[in-house]
Image (cartoon, rainbow, N blue to C red; front, top):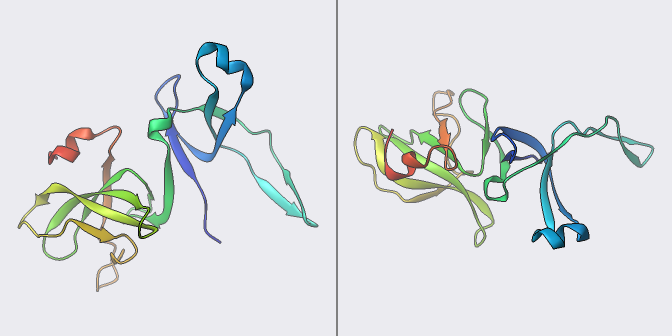
Amino acid sequence: MREILFRGKRTDNGEWVCGYYVLRKRPYFKDKGVNVEHLIYDNMEIEDNDYKQFVDTMPISYVVDPKTISQYTGLTDKYDKKIFEGDIINVTPDITNRLMDVRWNDETLSWELTDVGTPAFGINHIFNTIDLAELEVESCYGERISFIVGNVYDNPELLKGGI
């Protein structure tokens, strides 16, 4: 079964949390100009026992910045780090290294890697967007070739071609 996870930056201290995303609408927030809270629950375990689902632990929730909420793609990089939407990845499709960021494409209903504009190292290879599923996570020799170098929220300078 596919693991559904989200991450976001906490509004109180800027730390990243990973877990289940909840958009909570609260009528009493309206007088403060806010009518929703964006939450990540990070320790919720749901057990399925005789067709009854229940939470096994007391969930802990964190209010997160909605601009930083991103979904787990289901893939990991060469260091077994989970790849999320908004991650910037060093990709080696051939003899070049490229910096690409992970995005969801509503038209193709797939995760894509979009070139951030310049090669990380080596020769400039021309491609703008590739399907994340089509990118072999492993090279022809069976070794993983891609790794996360940052994300669009913490490392916007990487989007401008810096490394």
